[in-house]
Length: 226
Image 1 (cartoon, rainbow, N blue to C red):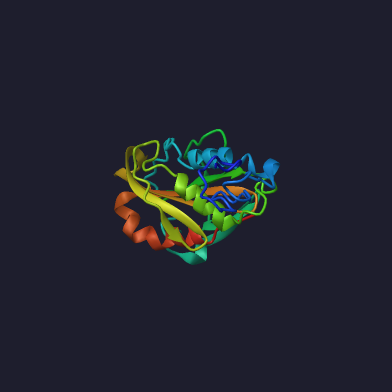
Image 2: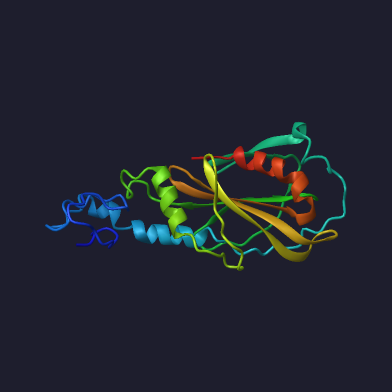
């Protein structure tokens, strides 16, 4: 017997599928109590997992300017910024700049940079009512299960948990972005909200990552979604 919601094979006597649907007793008539709410789940998860793997197209953030050089390590020069359905603490004075291009499902909410780092926030809405009683934690676990082994650029997706969100990071070779740096370090974090799945991306020169890591994760940890 298979689940009506996602098509998984069910064991005899199983009342609940891994996707969260109530299926009755396998071996008799499979019962989905919420067919309209659950039927979109596999499609939504597939779209989410695909959308979270971004295409890195950084459009010339080159800067040899040292103005504001201490904004990353000086917490007194950070500020709280807000956008549609989110807020986050970042270094003050960062400029707007197109940093990454995502799939059509993702909405760009924030893309800023300075001479040390760049930050991008995007989101994909999902209909929580259609997902019924699935918790945010359960949805997060299901997204992780569907994440590919490598992203669109061939970087390994080694997922790590960090409290309210999860992330992966890697080195990305790309010259002409930061002065004197041919390799970037990218941290890609995901946060599951009540009605959106957010992607928070921070990048900096690879050679500076060890110095900036604690500050980068302070920004990421400050993220609040809907």
